[in-house]
Image (cartoon, rainbow, N blue to C red; front, side):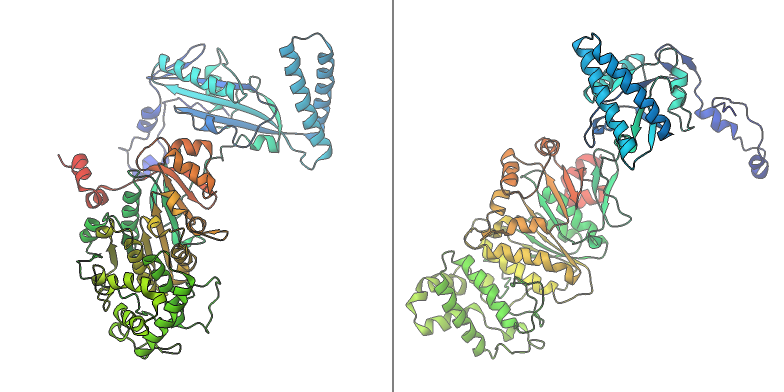
Length: 616
């Protein structure tokens, strides 16, 4: 039965009768059928457009995976049609055997060097195929026919596209040919009617393995049924959508140089998680989130020597042990909350005194135990009914050390005094006074950016405080954002970064996820203890990663630490310095991502840009 695709004659259908005589279905066909079909030797005119179908008449003998990826990414109006017809293995063995004999005879004749090499390649390919058919389990052979259909608005544009496509095909080892005076027949071969109209123009025998290499499955797509839209797949134009709470772990890592769009992405991601009812905690060393937090009614907490906000490092906030400082994943009921708190405090004190010796650390531990005992807190204390005012403060520890008059702690006391009665005392020495009754809470450390000796300690103190808040509850979804995470990465005190790594390992247990970001990858990867790089370990425990624009030196640092492996093409993308574009990774899938936003989100995140784009 012949299918007349371009007929405009239309009789009334049963559906027209059912819906009424005024319904004109013929109008649809008239609307989509071209007004002109003019076949030339090398193209066809369809209305105002021009088309050309190119056939592939020869293929390379050896190919690698994704060898046609550039063809499938061709920029232009290109359709690719591949017809595969299964053939009898027995008949193919006979046919290929005859071809081998013919090629061997031809090889013994006088040929030019080029034709001789071409004949050798064909003979090698035929022998491989014959061997597979006779010895292997794969006894399916396909006659493969490939057609490439180009469309353009002018003949000149069609010629430019043809030249560009032919160059790409030759580089891929494919031999193109234009079926002159057969343009309409070739066009039918690319229509979805399964009609291989020019089999004599394009023909190659392939086994199933070779034929499968033609399929365009090289491009990753990251799209789930629900979750948060991360952006747009630049290669395919599709959305990138994931539900991080359904992944192996719920964590994400973000890397990008200054101005790459890192903070913009984090703010947008935070807003979208918040809209899903997920509780949000943010550590913000650069005051990037203040306006966004206030716009959505969140709690903005300023941490500075003048703000009056206090987080008591000595307070034990929760009543269950979590082995955040331990190396094992298993809970150990023999470990007390006091033991856990002292472990964290030793990290904190090494942040305020970088050269804290093991002896000083041991002596301080004894002083801490005595300080807690004076408040009636021991290894066996039940903390379920304790409130903030029941715990000692740094001043109590200072007095305990002062009373012992141990000269081995004189240097530590001199530093601790600034946290008890000096410039840093208003942040650390006192009863915790932070109100946590909000679904979005942001801790702003901007005022400490010039105090390199204080900011890491304050950031760790906030992180420890937030971890206690997160571990209070195992029923509600929550997310922790840590911007500029390199601030806590100290080669002399890698335990601070280890604390973040352990949060990454354990936050899933409390229905939470973490997102850490940095623009200084060398500093971030500097926290090494033995053979363990804790910054790299955080990246390894991030099921999703977004790598935005980088300096060449940043890429070299990633290679040096083997933190994230990048292909040459990915490196090229990352060094083009396109704001908001990068490589997004989920597990083994990778895409070239462009960060998206809605006008409503942009109005909250960047009001100036919103005004430029949307306010007339």
